[in-house]
Amino acid sequence: MSSEGKVSLAEATKTWARIAALSFGGPAGQIAMMHRILVEEKRWLGERRFLHALNYCMLLPGPEAQQLAIYIGWLMNRTLGGLIAGMLFVLPGFLAIMGLSILYALFGDIGPVSALFFGLKAAVLVVVVQAVIRVGGRSLKNPVMIGIAAAAFLAIYALDAPFPLIILGAALIGFLGGAAGVPAFAAGGGHGPKVAHEVADADSLLGEETPAHARPNLRWALGIGGVLAVLWLAPVLALGLGLGWSHVFSEIAVFFSKMAVVTFGGAYAVLAYVAQEAVQTYGWLEPGEMLDGLGMAETTPGPLIIVTQFVGFMGAFRGETGLNPLIAGILGGVLTTWVTFTPCFLWIFLGAPFVEALRGAKALNAALAAITAAVVGVILNLAIWFSLHVLFADVAEVTAGPLSLDLPRLASVNLPSLFLALAAAVAAFRFKIGVIPLLLGCAAAGVVLYLAGVVRA
Image (cartoon, rainbow, N blue to C red; front, side, top):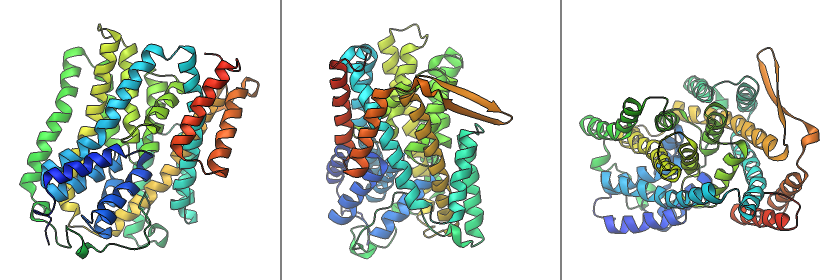
């Protein structure tokens, strides 16, 4: 059975708009929500096909939830369906983060606003710790996977190893292990949903057969791939050649284009890389401001890595552009979003037809399992990095040979931050408070502490 004629473009657009409006909670929640609507409720496709698409998206750099939307939109309604699904998935978050970025840049140092973000930092720290536990519990099923996670953590935390190298190394180990049939690499990973009753592919609108438009077509793939590559890279080249490669707009375009190629492993792994580069290399943000941006992304719909838009906004807002800072910030946010998400369409349209013909590839699934294990170590590094800069006013860098460690000065502990983070941890782990209530509650608590004179702007 084919999907042709089964789902009109108007119905598909309405469904994707609904999904976009409900896409809170990071990639795990977004993928579970898509599964509930598309597989269980609409029955557009079956369980195995959904997971096959998800496995491919998990192996790609960038936001797997948005890429899954593009993939399914393309399966159901050809290229236009994929474009609509992918753009709608990003649009609500783009508009929300742009508005919040403007407010932050203009009013972020005003007492109550600063106090609100003070509270958000504590909640975001707990959310990242939850991500370490959630992903680790799902992926670290044997000593080999635990070893990969530990090695990734030590490499990025103590040796300052490049994030892309860590992830690519893990993928190679997993691929070779899977190809060799090593049992430790047989388990899958990712954010796959767990369901009691499986919807069979044969019982879905898409059916078991591959639609005609989804079969490998090298001419079509190269054509659409070429168009998307030009749309993505032409602005980067124009900025670099026109303004110079050291201009802030050029740096934003190049950095986030590079991020779109090398950031495997999900949103939190991406954030570890962005935080490392945006704060330490480019100086666009302070560590606490990175947490503020993550708080915005956690409380708005859309891909979690839409936080990169805030990073690009602030980098351009503060950069030497010759423009009004607010105009520069808006242009920086738009540029960041463009070079971050345009490649997602390229990866899907270029590769999905061929992946449809490769269902059940064990070596690819093994690479995914190893990447997910390495991501646990990367996210743990992110949690420690955040905690050092949220809970302490002074952090010292200690070097010993090849090792380089950030260690807190205990006397500089921020007691209000420590108290609020502990309270947030109790709420999240003991009372199972959801992410959105946790973030809103901590933000309110920050304002209350400010009004009580406990914290200062």
